[in-house]
Length: 274
Ligand code: SF4
Ligand code: SF4
Image (cartoon, rainbow, N blue to C red; front, side, top):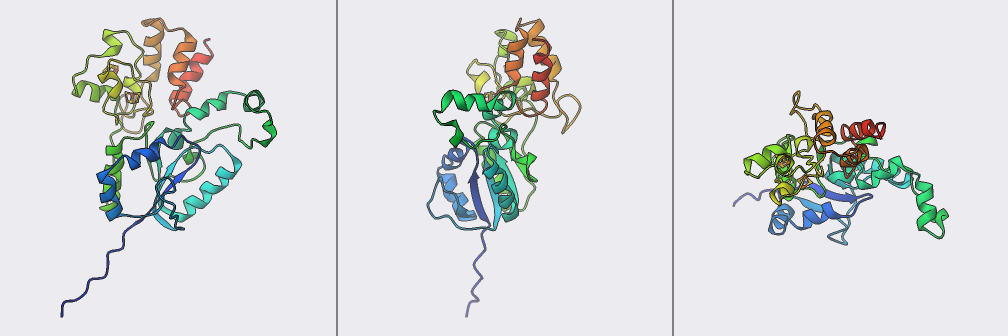
């Protein structure tokens, strides 16, 4: 009689949300037929955006979207970390604090008073911080939102037992590989492509628009892997050659990923010149 093989145990996946717009979770749903393949390779145990069947941990992989903006979230992420073998942040909010980190330079209490008739009901921290400021993160996927192809590659690597890897060089390299006209040179637009991480496929320059840095800082172009890009030189070019005034230079760097080094450091330099 043929021997029955024990059913293969699929890794358990959780997709968990903190402060965010849900766009990165939608990128997972937008995998379409690849999502079915993912569902065969993984046991999607917890994904409230996709299913009301929410199974408790532990999980082999936790994809975490969103930043920490409340005391409750700061507590909840500790429990997520305890339950997850591998924790991956997805998107600018989870990886860098997101656009909501603009509050880090503002008076949140005055915002609450301006917007809400009963601000005392709003329980919010004065900062928005990335997940890595609270717990150990095993891998980061950048982008606002993340790139579906990069997500699929990382999940495939994990299922195959391979250390995931995505490129960290600049959008410029992808832009040149695709043969787009440089909008910085040809149109004088303040493109952040030279200091922004590749991954989107250079979408904005392909449409004749300047990159605004939604994939976060690139690595390695100047000194090697893991080292920051040359924001100083690009910012000086924006100011000296493109005639941006200091506050405009500041705003280029203080955007979706403005709370993360080296964009944060560069924007601070121009704050002091304003
Ligand atoms: S358009 Fe922007 S991303 Fe493309 S090469 Fe020029 S500076 Fe780089
Ligand atoms: S070109 Fe820049 S701003 Fe546009 S999608 Fe890519 S990383 Fe984001």
